[in-house]
Image (cartoon, rainbow over all chains, first blue to last red; front, side, top):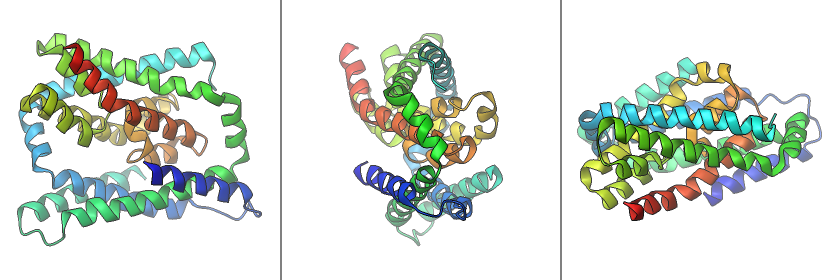
Length: 87
Length: 202
């Protein structure tokens, strides 16, 4: 977690002090890295036999619980956002 | 972009499965360790870079200030409430289903931890619930951003500091970077504590 924060902060500082702000388009670079990242994420999932077995067994229960969890997360975030007037 | 993301996810999963079950040509740790970490660090750097370049995003964040921290706590509460109601509907141990939800998408933590505290069958639940959360965040991203830019962050839970962060930022823009990262970071910090706290209540 530390190295993630460090690289993020380093990037922000870099961008903040970068002189020529017009000519940079980073979206191509990030697209390629995203694909690599998601591939290795999938690889981790696919190579985890315990995880695949768990989906087989209790998939339906998990779908019910995760749907409710996400639903209430969204509801709470929306409500709180109005209360504290976040943009 | 979503086409590439889903293709990469499917290919990755199939490759990981084949590699693990037939031969182990590539060491698992190499892809899920080095390649994953390396691309993530690089990505965070570039996303930070894009954020730093974007004056408007910096101004917006300054205006929001510490108020953005209220987001992860609402996500935590909502997740646990969802776990409680889900447990009641399914008639399983509600504490176990709440603990599983309190992984906030971090399945490599919730699987083993819930398993240790509630037994193997609930460990599987902890795995599945959180894995699905991560998967759903990515798969539904193009729809959820249309509802509200905070919705994908609520979907992502703890994963919005790493695996789902690039996808969220790609769809919600640079200004969502810090909100998403800090929300995921906070949820990752509190996940182990909330899971064990729920287990002590049981």
